[in-house]
Length: 224
Image 1: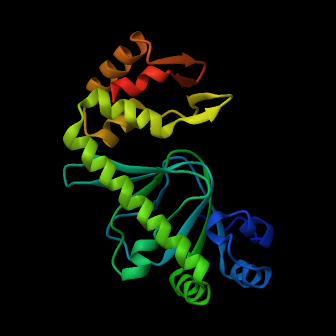
Image 2: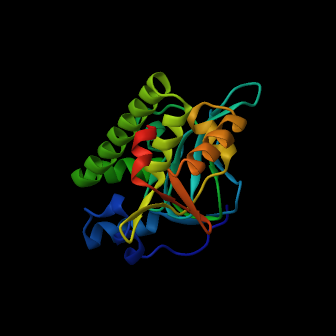
C-alpha cells in the first residue's frame, strides 16, 4: 500500500481515537502517521504476521477473519470509518491473531508500534479510548458466542441485520449490504441456508428491499 499524502492535524482531529489530544500532540502524531490506500480484496495484515503497526480506518470497510488449513473462513467483524485495528499485538507483543482484508477501496492511517506506545504513555485519554475499544470487542465476542449457542439461523441473521442497520429518517436501514457468503461466515452457517433464511424473512415481511438497501421492519425483533 503506497503512501498517499502527508497527514494533517485537521484529519487527525476528526478521528475518534485521537479526540483527546491537543494541537501540539496532534502535530507530533501527524509527523509519525502514514496515510495509505488499499484496493478491494487487498490484505492489510495477515494472521501470524509480526505486529508492527496500528491502523485506523478513514474510509471504506474491511473484514476481520480467521481461517483454517482447509481454507474455511470465519468473519469476526466488519470495520468501518473511525474504527481501528491491530492494537492487541502492539500491547502484548504477540503476532497478528487474525487477518484483515478490504471489502472495498479503503483509506487508512498507520502508526508504528514505537510511536503508538509512546503516545499511549503520554496521553491517558488515548489509552482509555483504546481500552474502551478492547472492551467493546470483548462484548461483541460474548454476544456472538451467545447467539451461536442459543439462537437458530433465523435469529442469527436477524440480529446481524439489526447490528448492521443505520437510522435513516426514522427507519432502520442496512445501507451497505454484505454478500450472503460473508453473512454465512459471520454467523456460522452455509451460504445456502443464509439465502433461504433471507428469502423467508423478506417474504414474511421482516424487511423490504429498497434499491440497494434493506429496510428493516419492527417485527424483525420477533425473528431473533
